Image 1 (cartoon, rainbow, N blue to C red):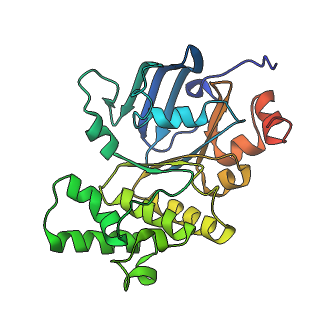
Image 2 (cartoon, one colour):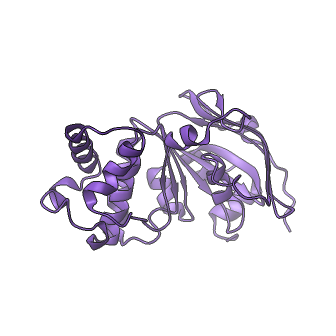
Length: 269
């Protein structure tokens, strides 16, 4: 058991925030079935950047990601305290509207989850749910989002065919397009390239780096090389606590804490 001193993100000396925080997490605790999964998380995630969450298996990475779009608190055995502010709005306030919150978050899961309908309807589904009925506008949304993820030229002649006929890499890009179609503020990715081949992984990574011009992106990844390729900032979690948070190159090449050094060197997995 390691017992290195823990420094919360807001105290970390190697952070130089050049951008305004989009997400602010304050005194966040998460307990699942009586077990404390996240402990006293205090963190500011900058706007228009890619932040990767890294750490060993079971450290709370996915749990932290799910707190950002309130995917955890539907369960009776989950207790959450503290606050998560998105543009200053506390998404855990008593009067917070969950549908409104989730509309702000585009989610890419570990494996692509296409809806059992056509390519066109997969992307049009979200705008329809939120009230868009104009067929011309829906067509424009579908084309624009397919172009945004580099799929338009590949699928423009088969928009009425089932989304399940696409390759896994294409399905993941389709899921990204579907998320973007409801105009979110933030993109969340949970090991979103782990099921993809290297070429599809590179396509998704390049898309995310381009999309940060318009979105704040938070990714969970267990691949340090990927975190280094795509991230502006890295958060290192260990046993449910923030050990270190800072700019990517600084944290990976010059970690401040011994436990971070051990993880980066591969001694902790």
